[in-house]
Image 1 (cartoon, rainbow, N blue to C red):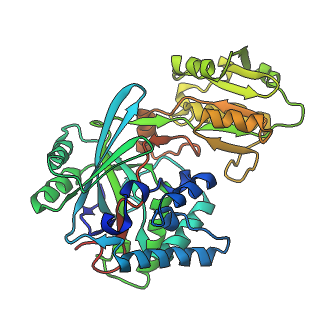
Image 2 (image 1 turned 90 degrees about the vertical axis):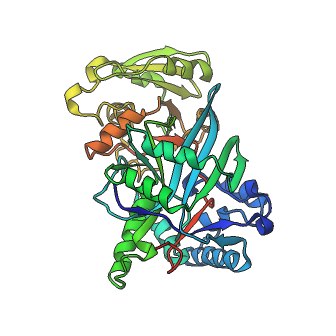
Image 3 (image 1 turned 30 degrees about the horizontal axis):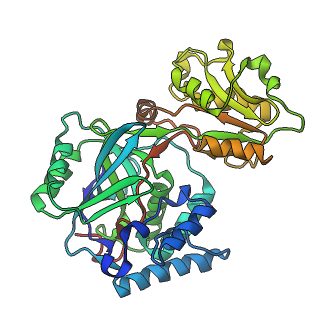
Length: 422
């Protein structure tokens, strides 16, 4: 585990910002243009104004975000924590009909690219965007989502003690309850940090944020040598993945197809069977879980054919010896179907494929004519993700979508002297 430490966070002051359930935002990379407008309408202080600034002129919009953040600090909309702290963060949500609670904490993590385990490749365009913003705001606006394994549960038990106090934030946003507790007691901080000192950290979400923070540190390190400077650290949310529930949603694929293309073109690659509707298609997907060596299957939708279920011919399925990445449903889909049938290989550069976690949205975008084919997948499991990370491998893009997302704006980790904690 990389070195972690408490820090002084900038947090909203409800006396000036107003209702806190109206000021937070999801991570920038899951916000659509429609949702961005809706978030801005909730409050003049909604954090989306900083996290995802408006404007076509890159330099201008990033400078505007920095000006907004500076103004909010000056006017007390955001206030700096009095003492370096850990921020225990609790999310209460539902997994189907069951209630679930995930407990973790926010800390500053020293940037060490060799001390974290990643499972996802990153893309140049979002890294360029986040780097330009980071250079202007000089702060981590939203956390990296990190996992650790603690079989003893000692860190989890320590965090649960903190929950006996009063939360500084208690809001419900989009059906998820978010509670934040400020933990500044030295003995508690020491116990938590000590409990994580020998454990690796897996990045669940925020690979781009981690890489950008590391790039920024390298750039700053050539000019400044202060090892305690805030830019040597990134804000990370840590949670014990063996003592907390995890919901991973699938990310469905949308593909542009040639004129006149129909699902029957896939008949040579496997077996097709009709489905009544989206609900029955997704229900069939959830009824079975493909295992290594088994037949892999996916849901399909086209305007002409409606809903179909596709079972890949077993002779085309990967062998167990091919490794954990090749055995993933999402890898099989891309390498056995999307690449050979549609010629889409570099998905990060192609305009012929897109992604959505909403199966309903996928259907609507096909019905509208924007795309010709929707492909529905099962979610990648937590154990699959951990196995890939431990082996130093990378999954295809958009393989995991952890739910619920962490709020942006809940705490801000500044880079300037005195903000990061010492």
